[in-house]
Length: 285
Image 1 (tube, rainbow, N blue to C red):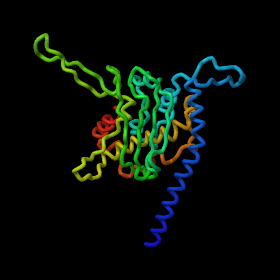
Image 2: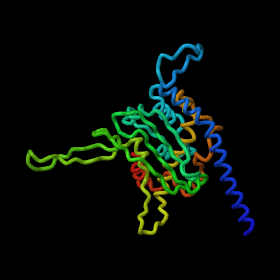
Image 3: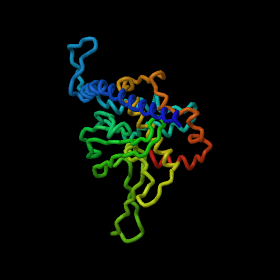
Image 4: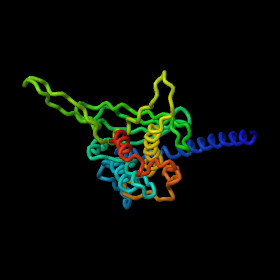
């Protein structure tokens, strides 16, 4: 119909204008984030608020991003209007992750290859846990407003020997002679760094792909965390570092599930609790 074609034209124009406006303000925000990184990593020293000529004796802000993310975890997280499953989607930092995250010096995001994709980069100082200097997650969106995700790309972490935080090495003794070497098993353990290993896309080149609802639920949950890092944690880092909460009027409704979003009971406590718990643990534990 002619009316639908006109609507589609306006929708495409809206999409382009929205992308242009985002790009315009990102250019204005980025210099502020660069200065913040310099302050946090001690490339510049901040003066005392009461005496600007007095240099801060401490260089940089110790454990800045670790504190930011833990404070968000403790004060904000995802809210589901009283539904308890939000705990499965919160930005969870485990005690075993904390030392590694003290080496995190900045978090950045940008569009990649056009408006459909965006990436989040975690920049690390040299550390005893892994060799990567940057850990990246990238989202390829079909429709970002509708939270329709086509693929998510992660980063393979190159762990130093014996320092892997996502798996434990277990030695299992086997029956045999004294000289028999024990069997080495690997056991998954909960870690924030599992975030960089998103659910694999359930598709093989020679098999027609049918929509996988379970995969879509997992990938949407992953995207919610990524969009929170992009839209809340990066722009409000100083506020979160100070332990302040993000005001409700600053929140984007697109980043919070409402009861209308849960028409299919995706996060209902009655729906296959044991099966869903196993799925979430597989993704984030």
